[in-house]
Length: 79
Image (tube, rainbow, N blue to C red; front, side, top):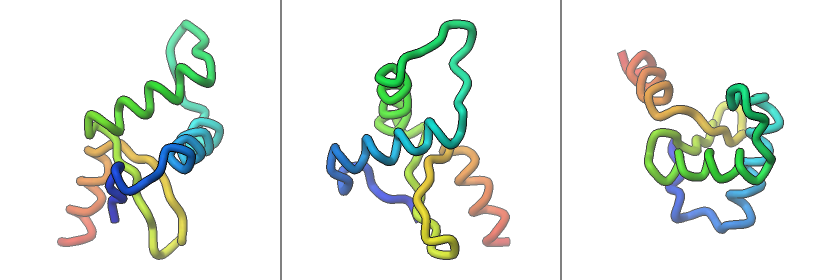
């Protein structure tokens, strides 16, 4: 289930993004990006809709996924 961005307060959103960044070890290319830059990049992806915040009832957890990955996983589950 996608959690709409506007339903998450700023402090919680930042905490979710920080957890995602630390957990995923995201790659930002040759240039080493600061934590603030990484947060801003993920937040921008969420605002643009290329990434989504997803709640898993099965795992009782929140994660950030690329929109395409989320759509593909749902398509497979609904077949």
